[in-house]
Image 1 (cartoon, rainbow, N blue to C red):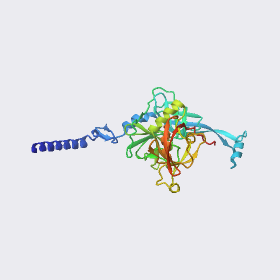
Image 2: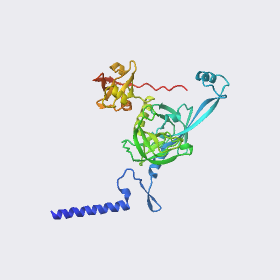
Image 3: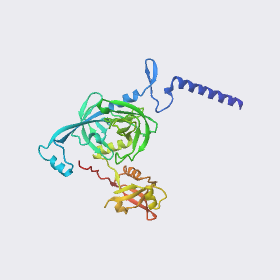
Image 4: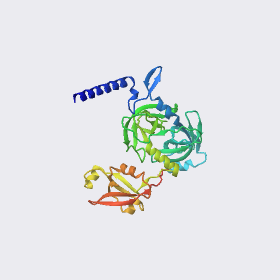
Length: 377
């Protein structure tokens, strides 16, 4: 027994000695997803994210848009109807070109580029510039204002498509890099970490499930790539929180998984297709919980039911409390919308509803969410 113990002790000592030598002399050999890969430079080993940037940067493009704007020659009165009337008078306005810039990501070798909807919205001409100097006029395949994504198509050969993080394994604290064209100065890379996941209620989009990062994101970065240390796309840079117009270390990106799903739908159908019940959910506030004699604020209350919609046909009423969807508890209205979105029209869902002090179980056929209409300017 003592002999076995001595052998075990010696083995542990040797292993610890090997681990110490490796961690001191060759730390890059140790596993670690966010450790910068080792790069040999002038005979020294240094930490660098250069391989990840070199892999992803050619896939990030600059997006330039131009649209024709009718500018009044004299100040307009505050009345909107009178404004519209005056704009229609010949000689009252002068047509000018308005330009803007943003970024995009080549996601398929056959020319599909993913960017933000607000980058190309209302544009008459969209130009794309690649890192290798090539330029092309892009065609708008489709846009999804509710997620602020758009898909462009360019006709060029040998396009460098970016790799996706298929496992969607991003964690808070992971190192990320933002690549884009801030302020039009040219392609720029900034580095930070994932500050939070699943950010919503920001009032930016209808569907929000943002990655928050402190990697510097500035005007012009919109539509660019957020990548991991392996050069894989993990998000589409979309918005910043700023009181000055510049980066304050709070940026938001649409996760690559949902973005890829919307990309496929736009390419196949021309628009994003989402599950829909024809009702308007609302969060349960503490006051509503007391009024409905609920023990918690989890769930969603039905604020409106669309006539002849799936919910109306299934008997859902205004004031119903939605407790669970397909056996899983509904946290709030955002949770309900995000879980319904990927469901296909025609599929069945089971809802658990609280009404007048008792629980009902209903089955509803999911419909196709109508196209969002934007108010005319």
